[in-house]
Image 1 (cartoon, one colour):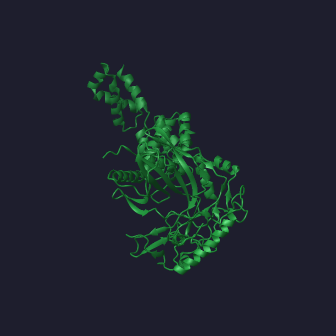
Image 2 (cartoon, chains in turn cyan, purple):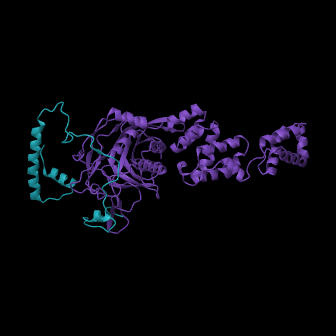
Image 3 (cartoon, helix red, strand yellow):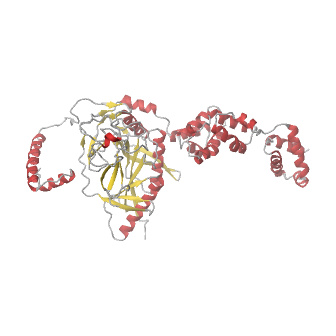
Length: 96
Length: 480
């Protein structure tokens, strides 16, 4: 698979990131290397091998339905770039 | 315009908020109505370095609903990330089983004009809810409340197998009854505990391929599900008849104008790049677990209604009505265990009791009415100590408010029908003396007049004369 400038544009759009033309070229080269690496892996015959969903073998690591771990609103809003003391505030999302 | 050549094809996605105490992946409360951003933890806020852990109760509930809908329960499960950006989604992804649901297939039977139709489910999966955006508080900013972020949801998805808004209405009604019945969701659409999105398309009758679909969102009551679908079908037919084409869109239903409004086009936004969430271990469901959930399921409403008909000789209608609500059905069962006038119990519960509950927006668990008191009330009606109207209007409100014996209430309020034959005989004699013309007609053979005489005695006695004794006495006097 060939990574084109178009692919980079699409991915940066999905990731909500902006790159300069020079950066795009670098990313294109990096991504092409990564894809090449994955394409090598794809040559391995994995017939009958279940996909690895998680790095640990553990399953059913669950918790009971019990209240725990909440923090105060003051603490929650502490790192917010913008808030009114009650809500996180962000630039207007929809046009009225 | 000829609309009859078109057929609507509808698929529904219902999101049911689970009645757990805490969120899907952390221990924040999910109680509705708290002050904004007071039910949040670093996990809800999506801070780096936090580790989510799945709530066992959410899995219990998913399997419960899956079994209630005859789904196949999938053994090996994992959660995936659905990646997109929106301010009320703090992590930049929603954790969902969108691609690998815990329940596959399944059915929900509905009734349209008395005819059963099976609604085919595609799947039921577990996912987390997003936070809430409030757009109208400030001019230039949107406010974000993350209390709801991370709340466990079940998404119940039908096949595109519904063909009218009425079917959609019945399906959501049935599904809401079911989730309430098995206790996984409170079904409150106004508070958003149950939300319905409708995928609507139209095609010419006889065609087998699906038309371009539009997703209609923001429908906050079952009645509006019906109205929104009707409005969208109408819009599509008018569009196509006018030479236009339907484009794939998300639209929102506006109750005030009864129209749907386009909110976004769905052309390139659909790349969510799902992948297994590396923070969460997979979870497996054993056959033993499924069996234990199966054993914990209550008898489902349709089956219970059937049992009520068989066991207690109730009509289709009464049985179905009693099984609209589990607490009502349970109350009927409890009362029927101690009083064999089943029809009388059903009438009393579906009549005056339900009327009281509706008028006061209460459930039967929230009032003090006890099965033994209702049974006693029906017993004293059957014994002729009080009549039905006195029982329902005077005694019932008191035994609803407090745990009190109906007989005692009747005595205290002097409502007991008298069977003192001297007193009754006086009333009967008075009536016979006052109505010589009618008595003559009766004696000539107009036996139907007996009702009139009984009614007069009832009036005279202010409802206290036992109608059976009165009738007997009148009959014997008039025929002598």
